[in-house]
Amino acid sequence: MKKKKIIVLSIILSAIMISFALDNDKKPHFKVIRATNDSFIVPIVTETKTNINSATVEELDELPGIGPVIANRIIEYRQNKPFSTIEDIMNVKGIGEKIFAGIKDIITVR
Image 1 (cartoon, helix red, strand yellow):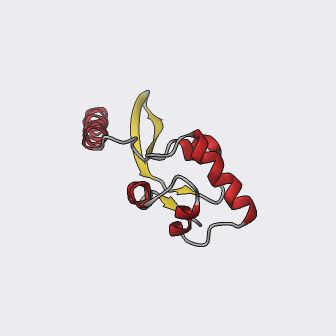
Image 2: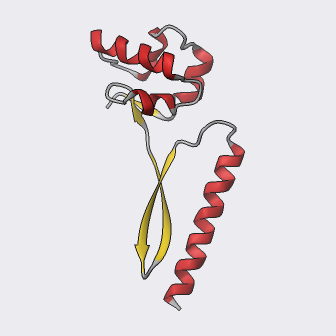
Image 3: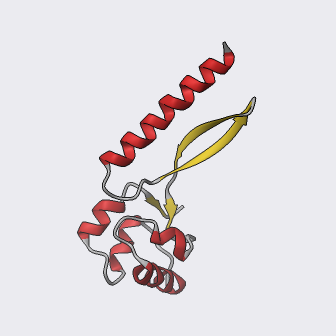
C-alpha cells in the first residue's frame, strides 16, 4: 500500500510540474530534487529565488530574458556596488521594466 501511495504522489507531483512549465512560456524557476524511497524516485518541488548578488553567470542566464551578455553585465555591476534591492537590477544596461516584471518574483538580494 505504501508503494502505491508513493507512485500516486510521484505522478501527481510530476503532473503539477509539467502543467506549470506548460503554462509558463519562460523557463520554470523551480528546482527538482530527487529523493529515493524503496527504489522509487519521488520528485520534490522547491521554489527557489536567484540571489542576484551571488549568482553565477550560468544561474543568471537561466532567468527569463537574461542571456549570457546581460548576466555578465549583472556581475560587473555588482562588483562595483552590490544590489540593495531587486529593483536595482534595472540599473544594468539591457534590463528594463519588461524584463524586471518577468523576474521580480524569482530574484532576491539576500
